Length: 356
Ligand code: IPM
Ligand code: MG
Image (cartoon, rainbow, N blue to C red; front, side, top):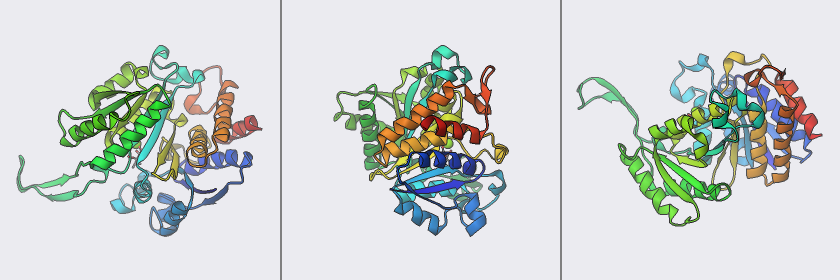
């Protein structure tokens, strides 16, 4: 089993190092090879996703990814910006199904900005379509406006689009996932305004006929944003498009207390996957040894479960994470009075010790 390790920028290298430590102690004989990605790759090879990195990713069973991005690259041409690395990997490998679980750990109920009773026991799964929508639709660009309120002026535009097979396959992923959970899918759309999302709603409704044992509800995205902070536990699986999923998954992450706790998986139809923490590169705290490595460690657990067929090892990692939380160890992002503040490496070491 071969794993491409792509640490990236900011806190990426620090948190990925801890996840690699955890994987190594499991003794599964995983072959791990590192390559630069994002801003680090731009510095090293002049491109955020060098050919060699993409090749390594293609040849691997799974990719363990840190994070990319730094403000210092914001003025580069768009194709050279660090974010293009993650978008390029998603597209090149066809990683269309993005799993973003939002689980509120018992010990962290107090870290959420919502009232404890709203989030205690929260366990929802956002399934975001990841290779279509306005993120990738063509054409896009700048031009001179021909109509609208200011003809002749400069304008910018993007294209929102989804094809039937793209919607069908992500809907199936959601219904299958719900079958293993609480059998409820909320499909989030904007069918009241957008043609793309009326189509989305129609296709999801058709696919649902094959899953009569799963309950399907439809919700407009603005209402979904509200319900997520009003009664988050009413959700089980949320399925939505690329852009709405980007926004709602950040919102959902805060219900759990810290985005530093949330793993994610992006899979293609061959179960090859890219695993990354849901958070970004946090350049403001990079190199200080204070970043929370748990989201990356939990992403490594998802990798073992979804791409490498090692469910038992995945269970062990998740149990070890719960154990260190129960010991009262906390990185600064989840620290509260009465718990023990630790750094990135100490947190990784504690998980390793719990595994031993
Ligand atoms: C995410 C991120 C990315 C996205 C960025 C870095 C391109 O926000 O994975 O949610 O918008 O998809
Ligand atoms: Mg995002």
